[in-house]
Length: 118
Image 1 (cartoon, helix red, strand yellow):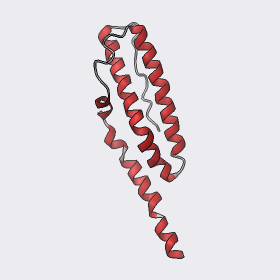
Image 2 (cartoon, helix red, strand yellow):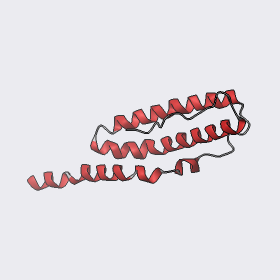
Image 3 (cartoon, helix red, strand yellow):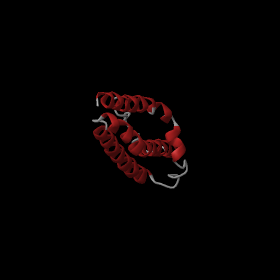
C-alpha cells in the first residue's frame, strides 16, 4: 500500500511543471485568433464599448483560471480550459487598440495595463 502512495505523487509535480511551461507557448499567438479587419467599420464609440466588454471578459477568465489554480492539477485544467479564451480576448483587445489608433480616437482607446495573471 505504501508503494501506491509514492506513485500518486508525481502527477501533481508533473501537472505543475506542465502548467509552468504552457504560458511560454502563448507569445503573440493570441493575434492569430482574431480577424485583423474585424473592427474596420466600428466608430470610436463602438470600439470603446467593445474594449470595455473585452476587458471585463478578460478579468473574468483570469479570475476563473486563478480559482482553478488553487489546486495543483487545477493549474493545468485552468490553462487548458481558460487559456484559449484568454488568448482570444487579449488578441481582440490588441486589434481594437490598433483600430482605434488608425481612426485616431480621442481619448485613445488602450487595452490598458497587462492583465496577465500574477
